[in-house]
Amino acid sequence: MRRSTIPPPIGHRPRRIEASLADCCGRRGLLAAFAAGSLALAAGPADAGREEEAAAFIKRIADRALSILSQTDKDQKTRIAELERLLEEATDLDLIAKMVLGSYWRRATPDQRRRYLELFRKLVRKELASKINRYSGERIEVVGSRDIDDRDTVVSTLVHRAEKQPPYRVDWRVRRSKGRFLIIDVVAEGVSLLITKSGEFREIVAKRGIEGLLAGMARQLEGEDTQSQVRS
Amino acid sequence: MRWLVSLTAIRFKDAQQKGVAIRSTGTQGKQPCGPHRRRDGDRVPAPPAARVRLVAVIALVLSIGAWRGAAAAEHDDPFEPFNRAVFQFNRVVDGLVLKPASELYGLIVPRPAKTAISNLLDTLRAPIVFLNDILQGERERAGITLSRFLINGSLGFFGLFDMASEFGYLKHDEDFGQTLAVHGVGEGPYLMLPILGPSNPRDAVGLVVDSFLFDPMRYVAPTRVRTTRTVSAAVVTRYELGPSLDELERSSIDFYAALRSVYRQKREAEIRNGRPPADSGYEEIFNETFDDPAPDRAPAEKN
Image 1 (cartoon, rainbow over the protein chains, first blue to last red):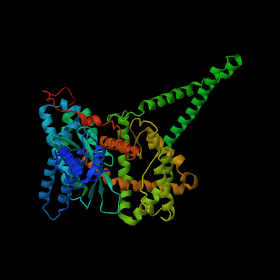
Image 2: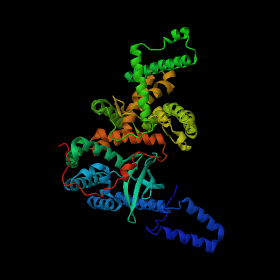
Image 3: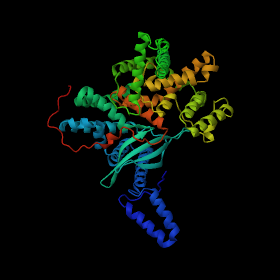
Image 4: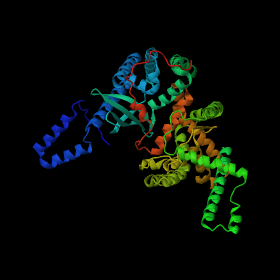
């Protein structure tokens, strides 16, 4: 369980630890150095600090998202635009879309790929916009983070609801590439958005082909408005 | 529901027969093959009809063995046409009965009463959870379940109030399907059960064991009480799942496929009891690379 308080600057990981070690040796003597050393070991010698950095990254993104959501006095269009900017900044949407299709991506023509990515992005944005007024004071607490492999880290959070209800658990899988973090999956109470979507989309492609999937996505994009009108 | 019970009963009977058969051949092998012994052994081969069933059971056991530990592939759904038909049926029934009932429940029952009903149902379920905690070797969780049952049953006014949570004993759920999984039984093919919804052979067997063997209400409560409990549990569960189900339906193109994936992931997470997955079987999704250029034209595909 690691709690991050101050977001450390990305990309300065090794130097920070060396510096803190030097500090300890110089000023507080051997004991402190030993303590700091064992802490560094506990954090994992190979990629010490990535877990903390990933946790700090998620904390920053969550705080920004919540601040956008809670500014209910602001114009809705502005808030949706801000959320979309955050989405592009914090997630690797193209990679997510590709991973959802998996091997089917390879069989798609350049034109199909372009249309697919476009539809995927539009669907995610639509989903995001539909949630903008659902916010009711939830609070996100980072409770830990864990490296999966040499690129991916899972940051665990608890989402505390305003009412007297138990919090639910949301895990964020972030990938570090070219010195920055990007969210590639969200796992709510054990259910991964990416895996769910890939289960669904791959089944559609297997049955109806990529064109069938694209048609379905387009229908979904248009149909949503009429559907919600019927419901409300 | 009844067909499931009879199915398990048949399996159980067959398993007993199989046990007898194996034991007899075992002794036969050890004994010198005198004529007396041999006549005794004549009883061992089962009559043809029973033998067919025996073969079926062995095949079933073997195939469960094959499912052992293997994470199900996302498309592993051999009974899909049947499952989809049942799913359609379930949606009709849900639309006609369960959903309206749950919405009515949501509208007319005040919030404190809802919480109390939900707490009561949890307390009634606690013995089942406790047994499964024990069978999974989860001593600490078994202790929590027992404490919850004792605290809520007394201080919580017969389970209406969740006092145990105030003391830090938070609720968790277990079932016999999870217990089987912990002991290495694979989930088997996806199964859409009428009314009951997403399942698989392992979880279906678990459900039968939980409701007909582990549930103390089965032995002490009159039928009317049990029926009331089952019906209210169905309505409350539907009510609590409502928002998530609606959300999933709204955001999916193929609701059936999305629900199947969610069910599998949810079960896997429940079996792990919140521990990180050792090997989720889904890791390959994250390890794919997409550097190669697109083909010039689409390979032959439907449409």
